[in-house]
View: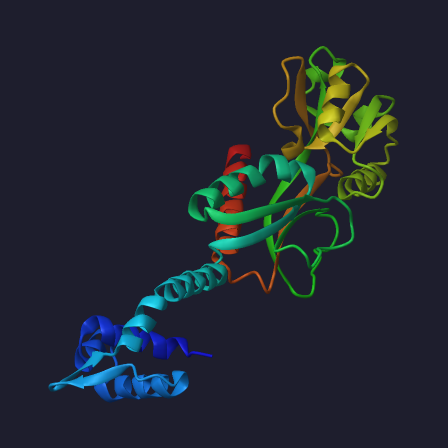
Length: 303
């Protein structure tokens, strides 16, 4: 197998015309260049240069090798660039696991930034919303937590808290409770409610604990795993729903939102888990930076 460094030195001598000129271009000593050339000649079994006056000139075999190696060196240069891009996170893939509302309202801004700054990067997104910890398959996982519970930690992952957001009640504008600036969980007693999130989701657990703490008992008439569907059911007059502010999105003209009042008012914490293996990659660092910027802007807007 031909050593690529020796081949590169050989081509430098051919193009520069002399060993000394090639040495200056490469930052090598002339003796080091000569050693590479001699080693390549032994490696290939070819005489690549012959004496010409005080210098050397390529033999026909040397010229043929220089010409024939052009495509190989070009491919090797692209391969070297690919390795560098992969190491720096400029290409390859970035895999993000996210819960649905973050996937809709946070990730698009991250994706737009990455597409502009890392155009060769393939972004893989996976929607998840269950309570069983980050998966090793993800470079970044966005996760919702209950601030009333102890923060989780996961081996092999770095934890970054992004923001804590309140829950709101989504209801029709003509509903009697719409006149209240804030609505307590006790105020919802007897109201027809739409549960957003199935039984094994983080958000369902947050609401169960909030209702238990308030002493109120919710009356659910529908349950859906889709926050869009929950809002649509409110618009259809089926009932009211409680959603994290992020999941609420933009409401139609017939609906409005009210903050939940009281010590038991539910909220959720949004956390990013970054795998230790992916953490040094530039694309991962940039994605986390954008997520923090979004979190700061949302908290500032809510203040």
